[in-house]
Amino acid sequence: MTVPRLLVIMGSGETSPTMVKTHRRLFARLGPPPVPAVLLDTPFGFQENASEIAGRAVEYFRQSVGQDIEVASYRSAGADVLAYETMLARLREARYAFSGPGSPTYALRQWSSSSVPSLLGEKLRTGGCVVFASAAAVTLGSAALPVYEIYKVGEDPRWLPGLDLLGQAGLQAAVIPHYNNAEGGTHDTRYCYLGERRLRAIEGDLPGDAFVLGVDEHTGCVLDLDAGSAEVVGLGVVTVRAHGRSRELATGTTVPIASLGELAQELAQEPGRGAQDQGNAAAAVGLGTASAGSPAAAGGPGVQGGSSPLLDAVDRQQAAFDGAVDGGDVPGAVRALLELDEELAGWSWDTLQSDERDRARSALRSLVVRLGEMAEGGGDPHALVAPFVEALLDLRARARAQERWDEADAVRRHLVALGIEVHDTPGGSTWKLAG
Image (cartoon, rainbow, N blue to C red):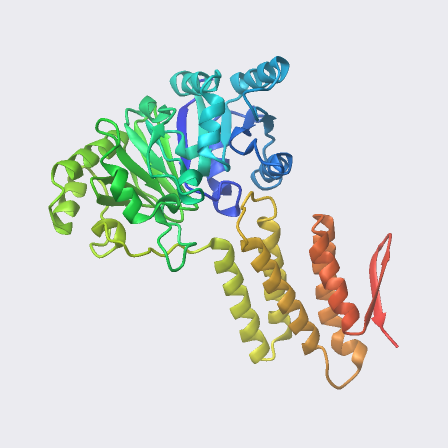
């Protein structure tokens, strides 16, 4: 079979529910299962929990995507020769090569003296799918951003030489994932925590005619090298930026790959034109237009919104729960709680390293407490609390099945505090009112 040549850039969310559909579509294009696939663990190879991160990614592909993926482990250039050659063999055989979170600088340092870049380039020339996300995505361009050194260590903003795999698509660009990040709240953390001020300061230092290709969080850019097309997938936008001027491509947009470079050249040649002129230039090469007042279009310092799909889901279910409680709708309250638990289960394999999952679990525990409080009142105590207790035990059973022990223990503690005795048996959990 002829294997397509695909280069996929993900801004974030690469092991979250938001990217499941994209991963499945990509695998479906690579032939009948089993499709040989590997995870390159180099970007996070320096972390003490590297095995845990790799394990969660493997489980994500198995449980959520429905595909097996092997770890092509290369955590350090100091790996022994057997480990190194094993990694290369797995990478050669794979039709799907995936890499994600960690440090782009560390990854570049380890890969620079290895055969990894040449093998990835070979896949893009002869057939295969390379999916790089988050930190790994930074390495794809002709220039790479040393994210942590700038944002966390305080080094001067600058560019490093990248792998230039985008050159296989005819693009000279620097990839910036997490483009719409808004974690800073009161300060600008767009552009992978760089912010407008620092990006503007180094944008002119890009080599040659290179431009910035920005990919929002939970968003992907699928470059089909055979068809010569670029497709935007996911929840956000892809941004072409040159000399401080930007143009956004909305999700669902498909354009010629060459038009990205053409637009960048036009933006660079006429940096002083207005937003309407930018829109006309975008239309000329088949691109969508952004709102003239948006920070991306204007190049202004304001902080863009960047909602979290997980926390958005928490807000929806909390609102549904509140509405059910206010209306005395017990089944509706239980349903909201169960759906929130389903959301958490879907995110359980994500390699997300922020506090979002903790915040979501906290919200779930709060709703559990409120559900227990609703059970207090008159009438037959057992009949009154039974629907609530059964719902909570169902949540606990799911959490235990997925080894989310902290959540399972929290549910049991809340039930005990409300006067419910829980007994675990080989056939499941039983309960009765204490006293």
